[in-house]
Image 1 (tube, rainbow, N blue to C red):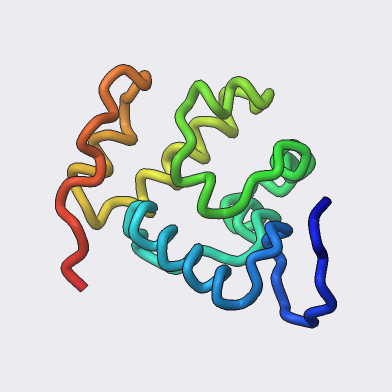
Image 2: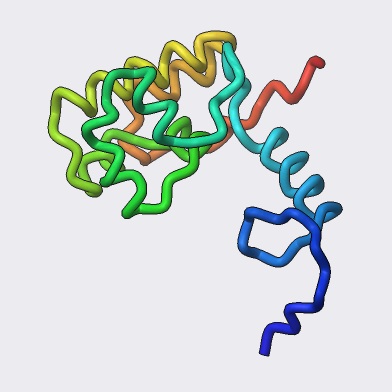
Length: 127
């Protein structure tokens, strides 16, 4: 089924949320995702170009990455999608720099093997 309806509401999510649903999703993401030093670009390709990794954009497109997804990536994730060591290091350093506002978040980014990521959401919003 799917009931597409005839609405002309801009919804790029592909989830059929409509504008209210998109706003709610954005609010949820803002709470769940780590705070960043600077706003993220809307497109992953723009982000990768800024980091000097536009050569690998096809990998991130294939894997359906959004810019906010990159902040959550572990080294294992980047290895799994086929990113070579050099670009992985570069991207992980960029991620660390983006998360440098919160020392706890940055610490969890630096060496986590995925074993104990619990408690990463401590220190809820101050703004």
